[in-house]
Length: 407
Image (cartoon, rainbow, N blue to C red; front, side):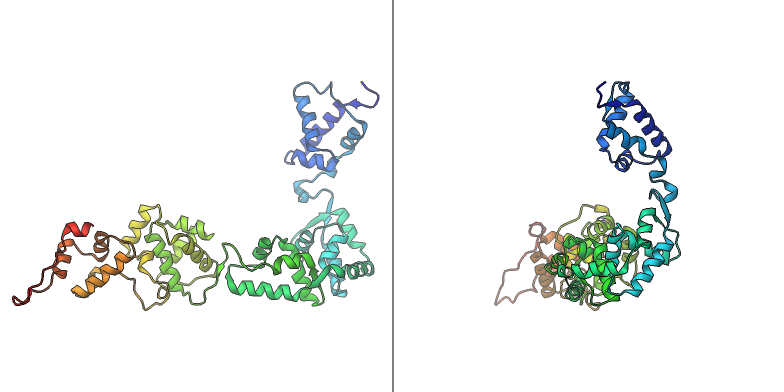
């Protein structure tokens, strides 16, 4: 064995002991706490399983890192996988008192000074305020308790050159939320490539002290965002709950199952089922955005589900082509080309010509149009055949045969 190397057997034995004490902890986490590459630790255990551990050697520095790692240094379930943790309540009470006494101090600055992420500090503050048990790392708690507010204020003022006023960002967020349904601040932040917790922390700081700003680079990412992708969809103030119900039922009539519609709109099938089966629809913002998003995506193509199409036909639900964009939201309107057999007005040649022209203009064949109207070829021929012509002015009778219908 070389003088600058040490045997790997004691190290492997110690690592196996750590694994036995923390069986649910990933091997990469043990390597991370020891400051060792996970691949190195996996290689050691692989050689030990194949009886090659006795031949393996390590550098003294690597061996010391692994041998010095104790069970108490590793995260565990009882402490929330937080390593050497302590009750978060004293530190959180101190942070709240600090923020109340110094409104110019941001929550994010406090978190950075203690070596914590802003989202972790925000979650701990929320849990402690709600009376929930919460533990944080002992080192972070001690750093929070030892914070010097004067020093923090000095650092915060020195960083003001990297920030800008937050009010334009807030106004832009409100504009996007008025323009789009289902556009939350978190969704807008993710779309702009900004950490949602960072934006939420900045908004909370601004609510406490309007002088607080936001990082200029983050603000620019949000301010240049003018369009949002699904599941956010353009808000339409004229859309009614009746129109939403008609759109959902029309998609079912086109062959789309509620599961497919829910997947396209980002909502559960259970919610759509309850909404589709009601006669007095009342929508929520989430359901409103989901139905509109699914309508934009699916209404121009037939669905793959024959059973959904059959159930919709049995319930008398009209397909998308039966509705006009201008009238679908008006409760007083009825679908085009779809008639209730129990309440049909009397047919006449002008009315039938109008209905057939409308349906064929939408792309239906004459056979499909007659089926949609609930008429057979022979009855349609009788309706369309003109009255007996005057013998003095004979006119050729236009035939409406089954063969012409099939065309």
